[in-house]
Image (cartoon, rainbow, N blue to C red; front, side, top):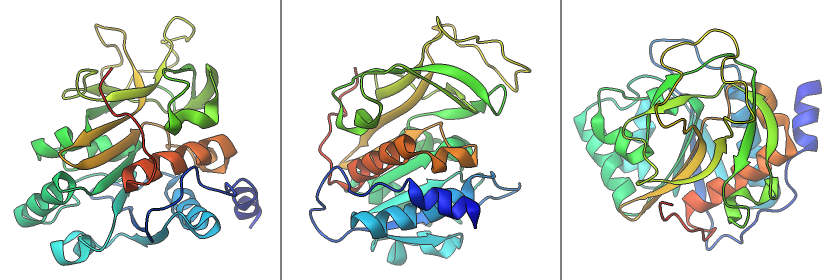
Length: 261
């Protein structure tokens, strides 16, 4: 109850954009083959409360794979994959339908573990913009650069930079600045990049570590951030404002430049 009260106290009062129509957001949290992240129930509740308070969307929370079948999927304006892991798409038809949904104007929001969702489906990596989940500590403290302070999705952070602790992934192909619009990144000059044990491959040759981005996939819109391992992410006012803006971009209500830069 105390944690719910804390979360309710930081829910944004308004959304950055007026919805163009009544929006339906599917919040999907299925984990296949492992236990889910501790932040999942906090994010689920936050998305429901934000939608209800701001009027920006109506959220449906589910872990039933059937909800991603074509007949069900088409009723939603965007899908928020909340720390999903494993093959959440039950067969090739569902995969193809999801790719078509995105290419024809759907929205996708991914946080944290979404980069290790459906890892044997190559096209999902292209839809999302990256693969991989190499990381260090679950409370790695980094300096985060706000790459474009004027961008409407990062407005909550001002000009930045800012310090923040969470579990930060190091991404692999197909991630590339040639394909996505990076919004937040780790400032490796001001961050100890050797905090604790490395799980996986923690160094990139280009020393470039994205924290959040948007991109277009056909007519569809994608917002992803590595933030979201820990529950405290969804008990933070700035972070909830950031997620709200990213979701509204994916829904098609917040106009934002997704040109790679």
